[in-house]
Image 1: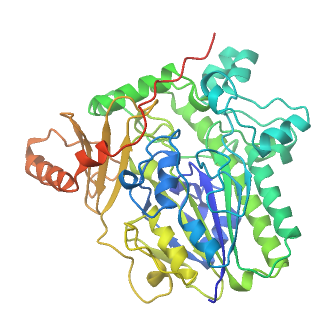
Image 2 (image 1 turned 30 degrees about the vertical axis):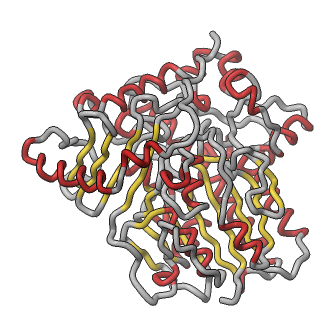
Image 3 (image 1 turned 60 degrees about the horizontal axis):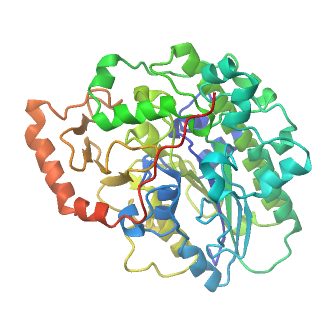
Length: 487
């Protein structure tokens, strides 16, 4: 393909098991199913950090987080390879969520239409960073108060506490954050008149909490039988101390309108997962309309569409909510590449790869050289059928202390097809899972005497990667937890 148009569609916090075509038969995702059916699916794509900004910074620089130096959602960073595309003659536009810091930075794009978090109060906890994005402005122009943890709590405190972040969007459906981003992408494509190749990043805010589908989409899932893995006190007790602190923070503070609780009931978790699933279906519909627009405009003959997410969501797995842990349910995301007539169809790749590998893949597809100092490896050879997936099947993810994960200074995960180890810097506990006998990661073998040698061997390998040095390279100050919501 000669300088193909490249459309990178990213959701926020979407699990791998949220697409029917990837095995989640309870989902209604006809558009994404089509991409799976007609494209290439990476079934084991793992993010390089279970935090929004850190994961995106790694993806847009082609480097592990410790080299980027951005470990929290409050640290400054800007993309690097977008500018490389711009220098090569691509018109680069971002519509929706990118999570660049500061929010208004251009990051190499010629145009940006910024939409950030659904629940991002412009006072109290983020007063110094107050920023009105395009969605904020649209809501205000329609005289609609943007829902937040504060407004929802004040309207009905008891309902808020029991909702676990699950609410219905009762306003105009076109003003829902995901519909708003999708609609803006559609009109922008319809109005575009240009002869240069296009790089367009579309960032949907969902299904990140609050889980807020419109009523008609929630109705699709009211009786859906969505799996809810059981969680026991024994499993929680076997988790590292830092995870206990994380759960306590999620319970005490109302992050993203989620009032978490200790061991929610199966029915509470099912209700939450139904809201989450409905939010994914809203995005699926807009992705379909975007593809129709690309087709109408004559783009599809020379276009690559990449669909993925910055990380996933525990949704109650292992007693946790959202991210900040190293379980597969948080680290594993969908990655689908679709270019009809140019790539294999219904082709699945099971070799574990890392999300940042998308960066050199895009550059190679555009005919650009890959920087020598990148950690990421291009997936283009396996997409074009010339080679297997890169690497040896070993993936890494990194996480540092921030204002939510306050229990550990630095955490790093190493995973291959057989074993996963999670090492907590300067802590005496950690995680070790046999992925062959325990793929659900329920039985932590860190203190199991039969696996001491393996544990120590893997820890030594992580030390060889200079983990302590990585922690010391972190920029900025550790942030304090947000204040609890006024009652």
